[in-house]
Length: 376
Image (tube, rainbow, N blue to C red; front, side, top):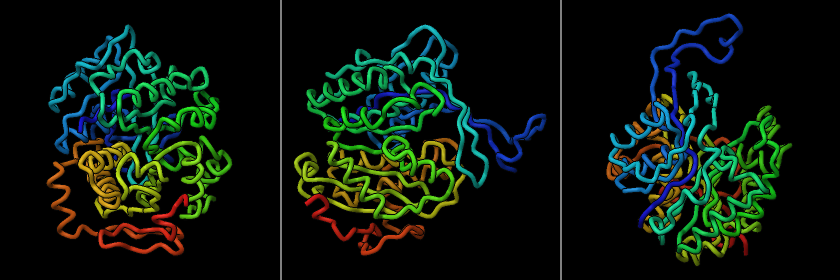
């Protein structure tokens, strides 16, 4: 099955931060670093190049500027054996992100949207992606996608469905002080999710959009994350139109639930599921792109017609490989190597959230008490 990854694309500039933390960043201070890495960033690069490393031949669609950063992105694509032919160029500066990733802490970003704000429906060749998996990433960082109450984002997904695609959507947390942060994301989701088969946000992205008080509590460390909370969010999103909901949970793994429509889209084993795939144990070097590569693992499982337990396992396994390297995709091996590592009994991490009534399967995935009848 052909996989297209569409949307946000930028150049990531990643200082190698080995000692200290964010508390070292004070006016007038200096933090000595150990080097720097340049890599492509955003959903198009992170999810797309990860799929390439796994053994797929994805179509990558994005917009870049007319500057040196654009040339670096094209060069990186070619180094990975991916054609840049579907990258559209416009005058001005390519989007870039400075990734601050100190040891033992979640990362922070200094981001310039640049050419991503110009990305539009006309940039997508739907004939090239017809009848495949269509994944769109990071509309909160792309002005045309959240302007006009999300009508352009809705149009993208309508066109993808008309082209016979299985559709997938990932999000990002916008700057709350920017225009995107003030957009009515719950209304945008209500408009778009009826055309989205796989909705794959992180927990913080999701809470920002549909439960702002819980988002603030999560940021403050006072929110009690439990499977009950995840189930509540999942059912709410399915009621809004999504077929499958996958919530990235960082150090806790990946939650997946679905309604009856998922069975029609992906086969009977996908209907009304309630699963949680804990992380795999690794020595983490960086979390940049971990969520995007987790999505790549899930899409790989779906493209290969795997059962949801297997697809969720691949999602967390590929995400775990990603964090073993500083950049998003350099730690990701071939799909055969990932599966060989799993077959050798790769240990999972311990789940720390409350999960009453959930039970482990042979794969190490947890099934919820409503698995098989989640929306029934």
